[in-house]
Length: 373
Ligand SMILES: NC(=O)c1ccc[n+]([C@@H]2O[C@H](COP(=O)([O-])OP(=O)(O)OC[C@H]3O[C@@H](n4cnc5c(N)ncnc54)[C@H](OP(=O)(O)O)[C@@H]3O)[C@@H](O)[C@H]2O)c1
Image 1: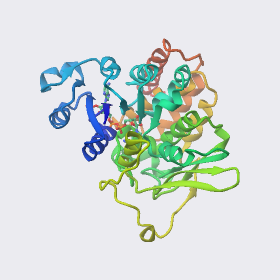
Image 2: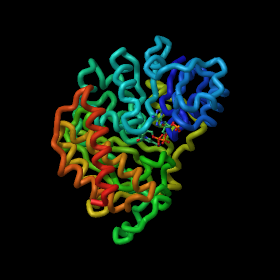
Image 3: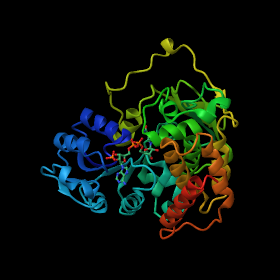
Image 4: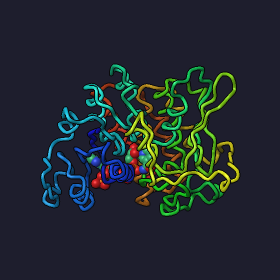
């Protein structure tokens, strides 16, 4: 039995993690749930899973029915000796402190929040054997992990991309696309931030940065291929020219299960098996830089290192929020991103500066938006 804590239990990844816990009651036990504002769902989760510890937005304390759970700080919940795995599924850097602390004290992290790897690589590097303690939950790094295991002689990694919600819309219409259109993802059902990032390809750039760090491989050896069906979740090419790919129906519950039950594989009726004959053929296309300008902007900046990756994450977060709130147009996202990157004076990321750099970047991005610069 593995005792798990879920940071972000009411979100898209959090809810799907609980689907997996429900399916494997003899293997997984929820001991902690952390959410923010969705007290209605959190109350239902407390009722069903009877966790020992919970945390949520303190202003909403009167709306939570604690039952037998204790209300504790996140850091105390994750540090409890009974905890084996912490699922990190909150956006942005909300769970940075908890992730670093959990890794330092030897806990296993099932990581969905790629922003932590993108922004805080240098802080993660300070932790002994850190890569062995992080199990990827995102479908693409999970696929790479599954293909790479017990292998050496890796030549290249090919990360697949669905192409996002605007993949069939011509770029001359992008100026006027609405948040609703961009939120209507053709394959994946995810939280709103990652769905917009999927359309702009900011998410794909973050995955390249994440894969580079997780699998310790050069940027030059990682490429992205558009695969609209999202059946192949990533591919690894070896020195002898052979390739391994991981295939499954697009359902986040499978990579979540893989991380939580690792190293075991167990049948799961929640995820329908692939019928290859029915699929018939798999489609692939080159990525189009004109359609996805954020991709190159983000990767070029990330390659500069220092505070650039943290800057990109913070800027993108504010821009996506502003687009969702109809303050800016979809096409303003790469425009502002480029401005912020060009104005940036890089510095070294430390535990003391990362939050300050993130806050300053958010402020600067908001200033550009509010002054319509
Ligand atoms: N969704 C996917 O399929 C998917 C796939 C791969 C990777 N990811 C990554 O996983 C992370 C979460 O994505 P998501 O789509 O699950 O997001 P989401 O649906 O927006 O859910 C976010 C979760 O985090 C909680 N939260 C937000 N702010 C918080 C705070 N300040 N303190 C504590 N909890 C907070 C939310 O709580 P409330 O709801 O209670 O407010 C919610 O439980 C992101 O980093 C994303 O890139 C997601």
